[in-house]
Length: 362
Ligand SMILES: Nc1nc2c(ncn2[C@@H]2O[C@H](COP(=O)(O)OP(=O)(O)OP(=O)(O)O)[C@@H](O)[C@H]2O)c(=O)[nH]1
Ligand SMILES: [Mg+2]
Image (cartoon, rainbow, N blue to C red; front, side):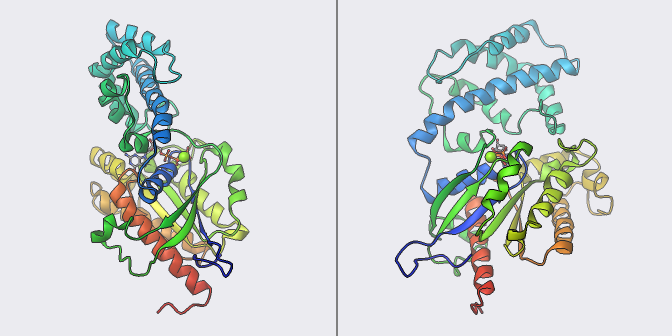
């Protein structure tokens, strides 16, 4: 652990940040945002590598929507059923093949009003592995464009793409407050930070991936733990009788923070997917009070609900650990917001590590 800059030998010292959290919480989206901000955009290779997964997101979304419709007895038209056959037999390996019949089939499926109902049903039940992803409507709405020859994925496509991470991936970057300064007007001071050097590591969050997390714990300067707010009313996939936000979010975080080499490491907690949380709260009558009965605030006020969850988690972690934690409510797909948050995280972690090293920061 230590401050980041050049060592006596002129070598660059990089401070180490690790992203942790359950599968689908939003770690890779943050990782991609840092790449986008620090390296000034996605290169051609990342764009071309993203085309097939973007198309696969569309194909899988259609398959899941047909399945959900049939499971819920929604009457699908014969045109939708035959389009579903086209989708089932579609093979996309490069994205450069003729996609015209796939394009027609996707369009037919997505415009079916019963499929639209299935989409709404699925969002409410997002813990099942058959559920659609929250951003699938974004891809389905632009499927005509995406399934046209020569399509190049945009920054937004890459950020909204769902692809589970396997193994650990690291990115060396230079934190330049000017590049991350798009959020300056939103409260990030930028004063405490000069340019500094960092390595950010992203890991897979699915259960079978977590066994290797511990390999990344040595010499860390900070952990960014990502939780998914809309999981507040979902069942855990590991333990069907438990709540997903509590079990796969809070308990997982507490378990990780007990690791010997993490006890002194500052933790930043991101309460992510706030945009989806807002939609869920607006559509529900009881809000979070079914899961958090002590919450007595306005059930329809998403900000208040998120603040309550933040206080709840803060109290849970404080029982266990005295290390610094900071909390941020985020939407990982919003580049400007994440620029601002990363600035604050780096501010906080640098400050904390200077204090730990006995440097007077006042
Ligand atoms: N609308 C919305 N979508 C988000 C947000 N954060 C992440 N997503 C989407 O959620 C999906 C999962 O995000 P990832 O970043 O891949 O999740 P992860 O934590 O890396 O998941 P694993 O790699 O399986 O551990 C992607 O489609 C993201 O675009 C958010 O704040 N709002
Ligand atoms: Mg990931």
